[in-house]
Structures are given as structure tokens and as C-alpha cells.
Length: 271
Image (cartoon, rainbow, N blue to C red; front, side, top):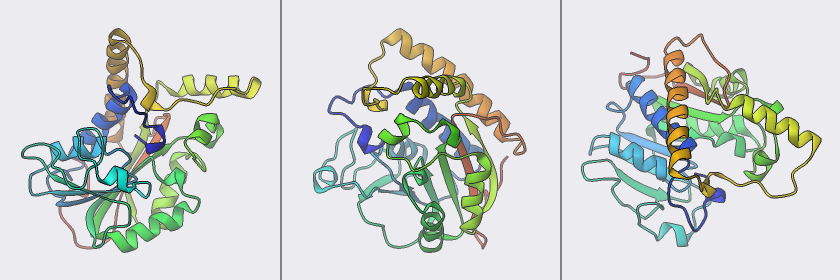
């Protein structure tokens, strides 16, 4: 969750966020990097909820560094289950997590930039700098972004996005940064027509209220279960299509996985 979306009453996670986390964990397993990557950098880690889910799936020997420029002393000093702390293990037997507000030194075997580059004005320069400075030779990078500039709306402005991306756009960003794109695809296909309808309505009648982020989820148990089921089926479809590589079914989000040339651990491709 972006820190701008976090509220004082964060409890249950939004079904979208839960489905997104499950998808990326399954994708990372399919790409054979969960067991072969020792050092991870989670760029724009937000409240670190996803990083904690990842830590539980990694060997105890792995290390995950959460980097977010919006971390302040009040955030870095916390160490509870829902917020970043200074250095707390995600779970017994899982990987250790550490947190920083400035770019950490050294290089990493894998970099996550999930819904990050849309917040950066110079996206190509930002990713290129990450690759050249923080990614080890042979290492990999997984990027996700909101999809399709035509869907740019008040929600994007609330989240401080500069843009949205078609699959070819984010592939161009990775390739311009020196990465070879290994796999890519869409995500949340069933939500795409919903967002199209919202954008059309917004163009006709601009909203007066400030949009709410995923930190404001107040759905009841029945609605939550229904969305969990629907989005779970949606993300499984995404994963099945990702295995084909050539099939990019449009979705509300786009993701790309690229690798830096050089000697590195196994797991460059999919099983």
C-alpha cells in the first residue's frame, strides 16, 4: 500500500491488494527466483505489507531491504505487524526485513518496483539508475504499473501518478535501462471495464470528493469473500497467460520481468 493511502484505521487489507500479492508471489515462484535470489530490494515498499508476505515465502538466509523515500523517523521507529520497523523478521523462519529512506548501498540479486515508476517524472532515468547502481550482473527486476494512459483519472492524481502504461511502454522503459524482457502481461482484466466506465463518468461529471485509496476498505465479510474469489480467478488467468509470454490480455495493471545481462543465478526463465 502506498503511504499516501494508509489510514489510522488500517485493518483488513483490500481484496485487490491481497489478490495482487498472491499473484506476484506465484509469478516469482514460476520464474524460479524465490529460492535462487539471496538479496532483494523492494523499491517504494510503502507500508511493507507485501514485503512481509514475500519474506514468509523466502528462505531464512534471504534478505529483503524495503526502501521508500517517504519513510520518516516516526515510521522507521515502528516495529509492528502492519507498519515498517527498523529490522524485524517477517515470520519465524522467514527472511529478515530491513528498512531505509535512502538508497541502500551495494547490489541486489532482485529488485521489485511494484506500482512505483508511475510516480517518477523521469521513469527511464530512474530505472536505468537502479539497474546500473543497485542490480547485480545477471540479476532481475520486476516492475508493475497502472495500465493505459487513456484511463488516467482523478484516482491517479490522488496517488500522484505522472502516467499510466501500455505493455509496450513499460517494456520500452526496461529495455532502455539495459534489461532483457523475459516475461510480461496484464493483471486484473475483469476490473478494466469497470475503470473504463468510471473514467467515462468522470469526464461527463467530474467528482467533487477526493478519491479514496485501498487503505479505506470497509466492505463486509460477504462482499470481501466475493471479491476474493473473483479476483483470485482473475489473477490465475493472468498467470496462465503469462506462461505463454506472447499473450498479453489487457488488464487494469501491466507487469514486466527483465534481467540484466551477465553471470547470475539460475531461474532466468519460466518453468
